[in-house]
Length: 300
Length: 325
Image (cartoon, rainbow over all chains, first blue to last red; front, side, top):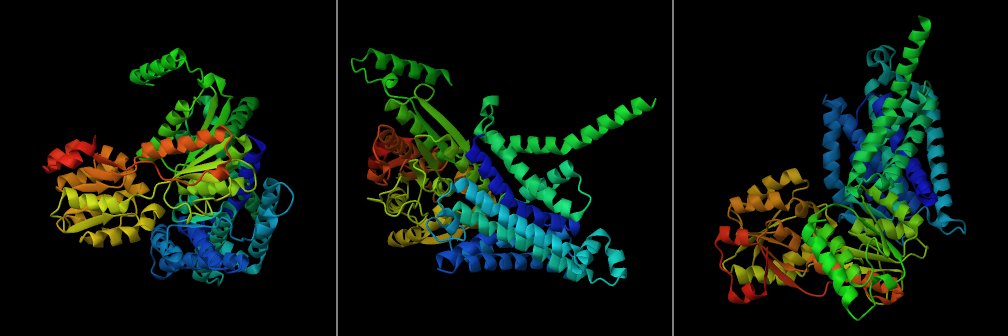
């Protein structure tokens, strides 16, 4: 792996860290398996791209993209809460619908942002090497969002949301409006994912209707790998763990791209990523087992 | 490598060595190229293979004096971005980007770096933002565009099956290639006096239903250059044959996979043209001086099996010109 590839993986990993935090919010904190993200990621890209090519300020475009993502998340939650539909099904409905909606928004399947002014344009014009400045910019964005999210989750409102996910009946008994928590939580989660989509489109130079493929997998893998490595006990650690997990996932993909020396072909990439992530997930458990085994031997 | 290929290669090498012209591969300085594509399907793979063959003809043989790094994004945009980073780190002499999303990811990632980029299998490089103009683009990006000759394709339907009244068009509304050609398809069908009925499967599991939706309503089926449909051409052509529908495609790979016929640029030709461009750059030409081009020739491709099944007789002129699969 060369340095550019490494920094590229870090940059993408930080960007997908936003997705990972969104997934952490829905899957772990709210206990709501949400597949909407496969649609809200390209939704963010679509809204951002069409606004930018129409001449809107890229910051406003990015903000609008996040809002659109929030609407998508809200819709999923509303279908599930209002009509009492299984969360998984509700999210699949929204995700499927978003494909057509994204096409409508863009008016065509692919919008190029090459040569357009984006929120990264000032950074790209800096005299320093592009690969460091972009990663640094992504780092600032992700850490900023992480801190905001942490502050929210430690506030009274955030605690109510966490209580809803931890034990809904108990939360209800404490006078928390649980449905409202789910509606807001999913909106927030998908807002983050759409923000990631908007940033992705701007940093990669295009929005494509197919670019949502694999978003949920990347997000989930980041959350699970992060948990496997750090075993976080507090929310701050969990947020950091999923961002680090996301970077790890991208590094694994980068490694898989370089695995040709093992006789692997370009088409084996997905398999290699899956195996490596699986290995990362199993390692802590294996280690625990070995330690257990040693402890029991020592005890005798 | 198959035995036949091995034999062919050995013969070629022998011929090269025997010929008085000693401009054979060994004399050209070693070069490196990096190739990436967004998806796997027959058409895209053909471009890559033809490209490498053409480079070998020009004296750059993979494994001898040409290092080839190849990566496939497998439909994942983030992976395409990571592949782009890998390639920039490798600093090859030329990056070849096959298909639109891969080309966009490469062009963005290369940024101001000075690596020549040659794209291929891109329908509309202007709308994709790859080049500022097709001629005199003055940049480090050039390549081969393959906007299919739709006018000729619809004329050909008329020639082959003059009784045709309605044409069923299947396309994935999420495919930039097919959507960008849709306007022209509607226009050209009108010119030939055809009525168009559209069906839009968005994933390969919808294809069967989409074809059934058209059975009885249309005389023939037409498939534009659509990544998803082209990858599922075997299913598509079997279903169409079962319902006795002649299936016209926009690329030769589809005819090989069972579609009745197509008029168009063969992906081989596109690959060869791409190879010519890459070789020119490897030999020192500035990519800014190479205009974006289409493949050199238009060909007719016919699938023999489908032809027999549908009991269609070819006009003599077509028979002489066509290539059969």
